[in-house]
Image 1 (cartoon, rainbow, N blue to C red):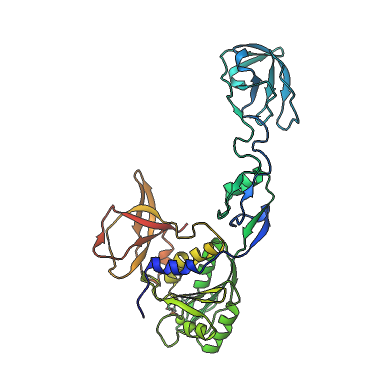
Image 2: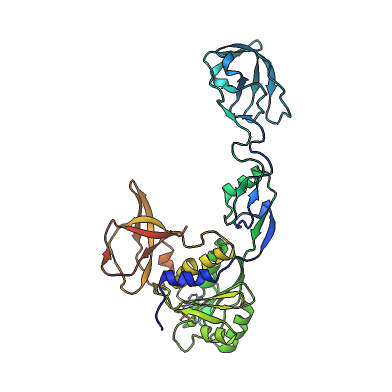
Length: 397
Ligand code: AMP
Ligand code: MG
């Protein structure tokens, strides 16, 4: 294997070649998970009118304390509440349009209402409990800038600002295939030497959570013509993710066959454990990731390298892995040559996040990995990370 790229170098190589795809108009009902391609602008002031934040009485502050006749009753949705005459009060519901002339709301809890009058004992401060028109956003202002991924708060903001459709980047179409003559589908019976195929499901789950449209292709036997057919088909997508067949064995055919099909290999081998023999190439506009077959290597490769590419293709402003910081529960020795990704359980104590590596860190141990909430990043180097030291991690939830 030639010189291995560092984690940062490999990511830079990938992101450099992962430019945003074209964009399309998406209706509000379908924008969750999508990335904004053109700033979404407010269609109205929000709130659209000065509105009451409380159930209570709209009055002029200078006329309090005092007892005022109730001249108006304003419900939420009342078209126009008119003008509040001097020396009177308007009963108003939360969300009601504050009548002109009133400059404060006295909450219903602070008054006594009797015989069509409201008795207010304390002086009311001007502007209290009034949500000014446009206080959240003004008509024509940016609700969401380009590059933002739309989640629950963002779709709520769009809806509240009257935005019915958004220009979003297209979702990448990704073909997923697994190579290996030993692989059987879960539910089938294993013959001697066979194992259940798990990587397509793992990879598809990562891709799905990264906004891709996933096309799962059948398992590919370890022979050249099967590889050729499957890879050619998969290369029609925006991204091809394969598992297995990228090491040095006689049955590792993915890189060679991909090369024959016109894929230019950008790199092979990253200084990362697990997942060293990862390959990355391009053919025209298609990115091709060859993940190693060991199930934990495939998971780590998909999370650390493929996901950022997919987010970049969708135009996300920062597609890089989003590391958080916690403390490590027990010391871990650093690997001199490779950055390691260690599966860990996450707990929270009074000082923050504590990470405890799970037992069983070998790259075939996907069931052990399933007990983890976090992927710890241990940068290569000498010595150890001592108990209680800060470490970066990716949240696996
Ligand atoms: P490979 O990278 O093809 O040499 O595979 C490395 C190891 O991962 C071997 O033990 C394979 O049997 C196993 N493996 C490869 N592909 C899969 C898969 N899709 N699901 C589960 N295990 C796999
Ligand atoms: Mg194999």
